[in-house]
Length: 630
Image (cartoon, rainbow, N blue to C red):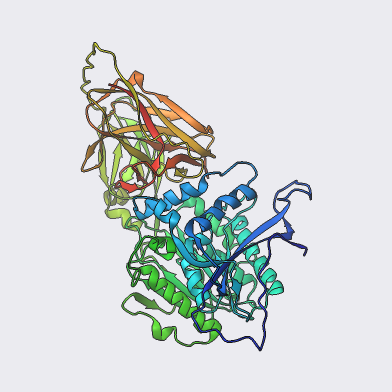
């Protein structure tokens, strides 16, 4: 293998005359850029192309000999690496400005008032500090989906202080670099990790003890690496990783099953000690059909711990970026368990089990078969057709969903629908609704006792049209809402979520206000038949409530991107108070997705996964706006 090294690498010299350093060590930080010349990155490119071979960037934390002139990296420095590498790995577009948008995104998630707080925050990682001249165990960190080292730098600093060298392997897929949920994507990260091991062990003096840490999607990559290289890996720590295959999304299920069917997928081959740290808080309506856990098939030493009161986000150091008191936070517990486990397995400290904070965790020493709470697994399929009660004509794009749960769909152009259910849904109520028709509610247990195909008739609703007054004055035209056209962040619709909605709140300037146009910006679109419904809701208790429209506004954008305008002037829409406006996903081919530009200076997005689900708020504001006159 020919390796081209772009930047200088660290050299750890193992010397018997080296003085013993008192722990904890200061943490040094350095980046290494190299190429794996055994793999082609950019297809059909000449050898002279800088992206012909697979580029691999390594973020390295290590025990350091710190000089008085050494300085620490800022958090901005770590995040800026993401922008720099995005511009390098993807030569089809520019990512200038991504650093600030990403900092704003993180700030929005932490509910901090000013992202400059994060921009100025300093780490305890000394840039290019001299390494301590002795050998240390190597830890490979495999980042979460499309993630990078900034997501867990506090953990890396702690490991370096305890005498580990930590190499962070980013989550970068095939050219032009976006990670994908399939065997191709995960194996790119696995191959990158294997390259990093070989590269560092050839160019550095390290001990033979190698450990892995995987966060989220990186957890699955770590497990697969341990399957393919059982003699290299001594210990694995999974931070709420994707080793648990939870079924329920048909598109993702198919891709994950293909990974399991691969010749490389042999959990029983793992010889490393395995620690799975699991989150405690999950969505109430997140009802998986079934679950497959890699840990169930690992034959050797393994430990499962659920961290009390933790969410998936708590397994990243981003969760405590603005916390003044991190002691006893879920992340503090997670970090302590990870460091102690690796000290145990790679340095023989024999203290992990003694130091488990029993009041902060639930212990299981073999992975439960259904780790997310033992929910029902018997699947049922409900078929049906929705028709007009008088004409018996099929009704397209009718909302069908379970009340207050994230499960639903819409009817197609023939009025037909399919809804995948579990036996636990038998005690739920199905609601069928459409603008201009009286809604119906059906108790599912009554249906399944007699039939599994529904023939639903909706009665047309009598709607009293409001008179539109003619105003004899010159009106002011104003654009209200979010105007962002960001290419980096967005709100997403996926084809498996028919009936899902995104909406923003619009504050009006004066009454009455006339709505003339609705605009949104699509930054990414793989749906050649993307169809949406525009919905406008009044407000109750700060949330979208009743749809004020009297007829459907259907927007067919197909595979278009950039700005989309929907003319509202023909619908005579007048509002006298603040309102919500948004889009509902109605139709798109299998495995398609549409992403709308979003920003962070905006006031947030309200979303729900199904037409009858509860609304939830996300701090990032999707780029919806209306042209209004008043």
